[in-house]
Length: 354
Image (cartoon, rainbow, N blue to C red):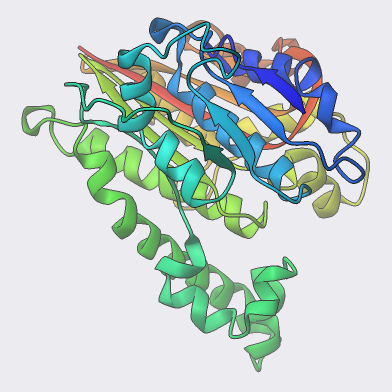
């Protein structure tokens, strides 16, 4: 038996720490070990659970689970003589955020609950879901006609190329394919994101956030070649949206595109500077979430916020204070290197409504 204690989930840095330290007891033994792996959540305080970190945790555990024969065994209280009992508020939050049900349904964690979890009056606008793009998109089913295409991570562009007779039409057909898949994603996530915005806050910001989230999810599917997790939360005037995947990440994606080696920090900065033709690249996300109106780059009076992006071992937080540096001299941007590589991309948008 191996035991992993989850004691701190205040930020995504804590997940890097867990992987580097607590998860080290299983990381190198997955193929040979038949021991049961217990995950204990009894040490976490309710105020120390960040939804972005919780989303990243289920993503990381899901990635490890793919290499392991059995689900992890989860406890909300100590399994050793019941020395500690589950905090009902903490347990209820993990349940109301869908963390418990989702991890159980995906067979990531087999929860050993000694008593039922109370349904306390938590903010209903909090939740995590896995966006299964092939399941929700008729467009995906059209282009990926056989399931083996998706299972093997075949690029959408290559499939479009196969079915497009004239080579000069490939780019147009590819953009059309992405647009159709993105429409399906927007329709699917619309209610989950719309519910955290009130009617008086208008549709402009809400519609942008839905489009940005859809673009990030599309990128996870097309470039990362995986289905991502989406987490949504509103607490008072603070809205948090997180998209998290365990795909190939920015570094490998850029290396495949440019046919050369690239370091993690540079890949992260390059991704932040990306502007798409339809104004939904990551740079456009940064500008709108932080609270700047284009094209004159005037500060808005409706909201402000920040975006945290993580890839491999690098974490970058963009705010009003360093956005100008990113635009004018990106080499001077400082990223935080956790020292622990974690596969995939995490994008978290935090918006404070004024």
